[in-house]
Image (cartoon, rainbow, N blue to C red):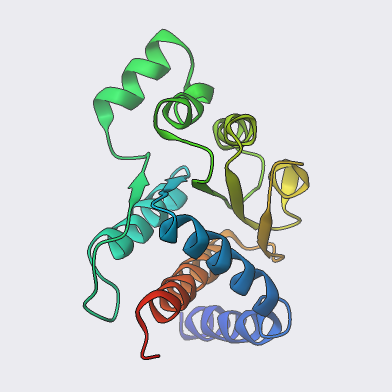
Length: 193
């Protein structure tokens, strides 16, 4: 059991070290796209399934409330938490439409869609990107492994990819990336000038 603990922690350390050289540019680009939208009174819509749904809600909460500094609330909506909306769309259309229908209703040109998928192949997340692209929204994709279909989607403006085979390690890096983006947004918009 101690070896399992050691191996998990060591894998996380090695992955974080590897990401030092691969994530700086896309993290800066993701924050820039979001700041530009927020400064123009746009909003960030966020979607994902399972653990990525939890990450979507976590990220939206950090923006709407606060992260590490007291500042005005920022416009962000996690499209993962309204059971009535999600189940009605899944029932009347399909589960693959639960996010794209919300993007259609809530998204506007200049808004940002943050699309989270560890596999990069979630059909409902990909449909949301299709809809965001049709509306003229910027899309930030957060993926794992090889990025899947989402990482290759023509509608993706910024791709943050954790190219690693283990879902738990990828998801640990996803929350780290989201926290870094929160810091970059806060410092850009509200840091000491």
